[in-house]
Image (cartoon, rainbow, N blue to C red; front, top):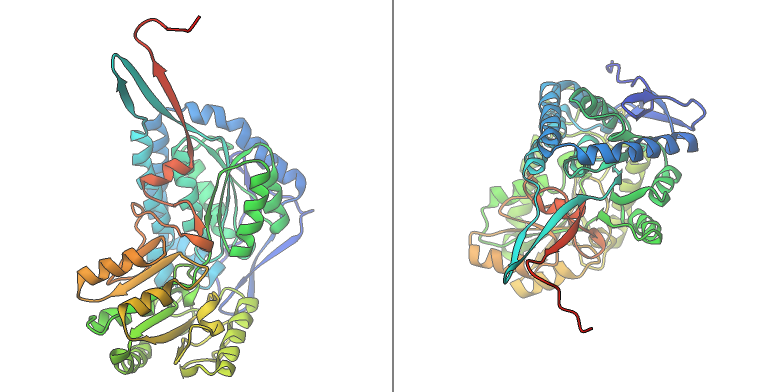
Length: 485
């Protein structure tokens, strides 16, 4: 039987839970069983307005709060998350279906790391001093104001923290809308931030569907929008933000290449491919789902991969022995199964998996296709499920050209013992976040984001400050002022 994860209320505004039963029902189901675990309501227009008003009312005082005090609050919040990691992980597992084995190490703790990292950033946030002969100049980093964060359903609390941490550290306030599929953990985060000392209105959470996100993005009080989501959603949000000339950060989808040269450490390369295709049941935007394996290594790679997949333990995600969980929803499962069937029909060779698992919930077997060609849907479109496509290549120039032949540009990985080649290939790949001889590691101090249709702007690391502040330049003259008349 699942635990009680029903929140006190659907929204969190001005430092307190808020409910409005007039909002559309928002039902939370446990993906491992289909059991309803919580009932919430989408935000009505008055709730959206209340959240924006709260954020707007709080922004001047929060911007004026000493940087060290802002940092101390974020650090206390990080400590509280770490203390309560188990309970937060249970919430996340109920919401997403991801195994507790995973959420205990990859979700709330990653969010805590981001809060702690930007606590340090807050305390050192500064501009630059300049000299121009006897004159001087300096710059100031000023907060933008009210920021809107829109989250995705695969890493709910991590994404909320990745957006909130730099925004709050820089002196902004935020209204955050989680995915309607995974609404629970952002509410827990808001409560923890308040307990840590965050003033009312600085971080608010509203639930809802697309119309709620649109209302937030279009509101004139909003100065900045940060989205994690699909490319179609990104295009709509970007267009709406452009009407108000609002800066945006877009972390969108991908169809990333993972390139394995024939001199690679085979076990490491297969570990990378497993992490880049089957962790979180494949529901990670940066996944390396086009696995390019040099021709001489393909057979050994596939044989050993199938042996390694014997280690999959599919079961109740709340059992820490389980290492492979369900997809987030029945709709997502149906979508993934559709990709698999069309892949078979297109002529790709099914090596393993390829079906819904014979158990309750929305489980799809880890699936591997070989003999995939670049023109197949399997190699073109983001599936967002446990489906790996293995493609053969011969030469370095060939694989770089094929890897870049996509609208996406989020991530890439290269496995080889030749570091000169690894760095040369990564330099030629059109992707924003890359790994050599590993995959999908994203510490808080590591900038994360994509190029091309995968988005723009960066989350995490000091560079995120540029996306949550505006630069003011000040010139200070030391003498008189010359004028032509």
